[in-house]
Amino acid sequence: MLTSRIAGEQYDNAVEAWGEAGWARVARLCRFFDEVGMKGLRCPPPAATSSALQ
Image (cartoon, rainbow, N blue to C red; front, side, top):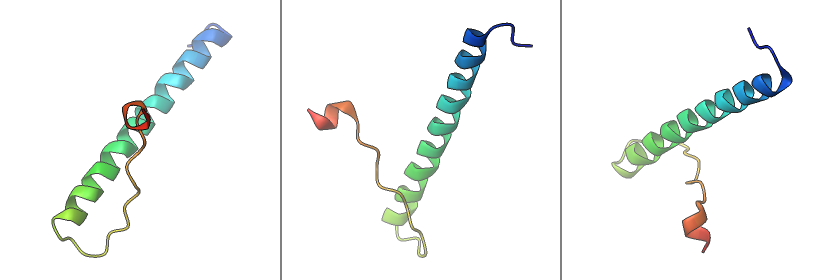
């Protein structure tokens, strides 16, 4: 049970980060299998990282 607005926001942020990390893994697997020749895939491009932007 969440007891404060701040606790609720922290929980929401943690759940969102977990989901984003999971979909990033799915995208990496998709690109891997696309590179090794699996047909019929439409993979998202890699996410830009701060080091790539510098």
